[in-house]
Image: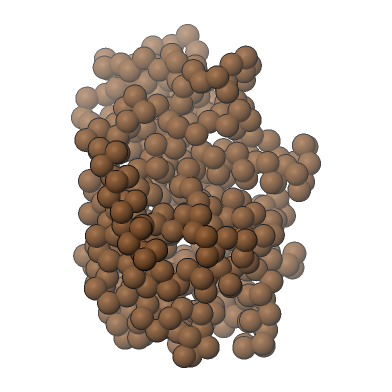
Length: 445
């Protein structure tokens, strides 16, 4: 968008000094329009009088392919390790066609919930799915969603003492070569980047120490971010202690991962004395409230992490443990679980919104995102309060969280509308769901 657009007179906006809205041009926010003011330059207008305007929400952890295995009977009511053992044989049957359907469903659901930037952690590469990251990039470009896609990896299978079947793991040389390929082919630099790539061994119990170290070295060479699961369950603590003789964070340090490139998924079981070490290193954490509750993994200690200086964002996690890809619902879940843990005086609805915006922007290394301020990218989520659930609400921003907003009316990514009137233009949702359901049925066999 080259012509300036004034998003005018919102019902409410998550920004100071922007009571009359914001002006965007060339994908950036160029002006905040305060109370009683007009834009300084002529603009087109979009009347936002019925909308609550948020910075675009940012999802910091997901597994898109898992939308194919929501509420799978074999995986119900299981903790993480047995849950994975039940699902890996199903995921081993993934095909390129199934992955494309899964990715498109996940991205569409995220965007309709107000998400403008998402990560994905794809680490399952059965034969025939070697170009999994390529499939994800193509889908993101079709939908207009900003993405940080991680080239995940596993090289410890059941025969090596790991959890996944042999058919979904790869050897170290293959993983590193493809990691370099996808970064070279797809990773964009600069504030306007729409597609970026990070490197992401799945977890300490699914890759070798050699691969962990080599991946950190490659990320440093290529100047990209690093991601993995860590401190998600007590089983993981015991695994690291028995195999490596140390706690998960100590193991990460041995592998060269205590770095500002790193953001970690879950972070439920960090000890208090570990948190300042993480902050000094510049590590951030993706809090996955719904997934941790479904799997009974525990609760991320968000307030203590933030007090120590660790940045915390939000992630919906995989749709086989969350069973949804709705980031606005994740905001409410995080608010409720953290409010229950820390009390009314420590956690507000604005904290939950901050985790999904500024906190998440820190996780993905994109300070130009996650905030409505001059110079930031023009990423917005606009919600109406016209559903029964909002009737009688007094504070529009609080109502989004407390009353349970779940679907954005409009979404803008880098100055372009990607959702209009609650619909993604050009996407036939009914046809997508038919294709996706059929792929899921084939996987279940």
